[in-house]
Length: 211
Image (tube, rainbow, N blue to C red):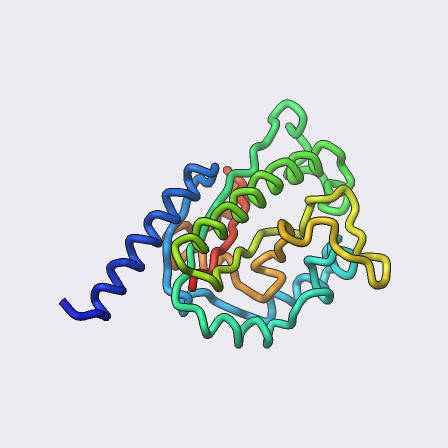
């Protein structure tokens, strides 16, 4: 057996371990794919600004406060593997019944129950992603980078609106995959976990770049 084959087998075993860890940290799906199958499309980043997302220009983890799609694409080309990971957004049916699907998105974003639902599920996802980065580092993958989903909600209000302000959680906060131009729908489909729209079971879809 060649050295290249040995390395490939070790990598696959490590990716399997990371997927298992993701499930133990609360993910509902996790699957490895080649980093070449992570689809980048500048139109995704465009949708951050048109119509404007509530994090655009306000959150330090959102455009235009993060690297460009072009800069990210250059870095992505250096990665060999990735893991697509999904976390359930648990819906409180009693509080949210009649709101999702009937309220305009602008009004829904201002609803305290809706925001609390997104915030709690995102914080669980963020903790899991940081744990997975740590696990990958311990396996020798020093460039591993976790990409979150949606605009960061680690704080009730980001300090990003103030010029020169520093993130309160610099070691935990991560930009969303879509904020970097990743077509999460297409990438998730290639990983065998297509995203429903409209969703019967809403999920956050994040990506762990491994190398």
